[in-house]
View 1 (cartoon, rainbow, N blue to C red):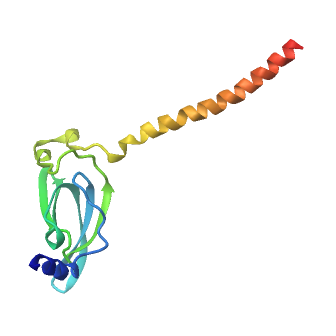
View 2 (cartoon, rainbow, N blue to C red):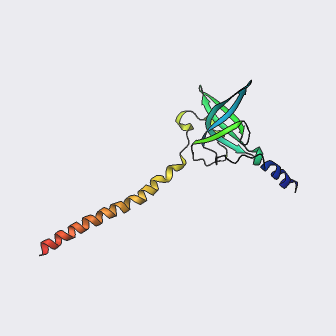
View 3 (cartoon, rainbow, N blue to C red):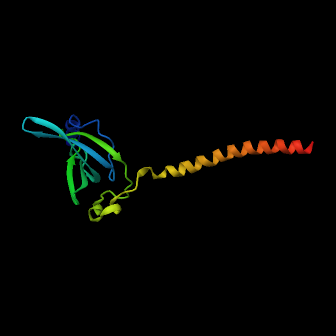
Length: 150
């Protein structure tokens, strides 16, 4: 019962405008930076290599490369310091944690795009178009055959 009370209290503080972020996605996290009396937005972009926790405690680890050095930040997703999360690219990951990307350099660091299956759908549509063209050609041939039979 205490668990449901905690969830009810936390529900007031959860953000409702967060996108569905998954491991492998490339994201831009817009963070509020307060310096003295001034507030500004700074963007931290990188690949999500881990997500842990649930509810108000949900955290994501974002990794990017700056000046040939890997920089990782663990960001609470429901923090008031996070203004916005934009998904730049959806990556295809077969693991829950992508810590192996820490050892990779160059192009091997990239993940495949999750939309890679669209070529299969285009191949399925293309034969229908070819059949429509074949029907047009067949009717043209049938008319020629009738003309030669007469």
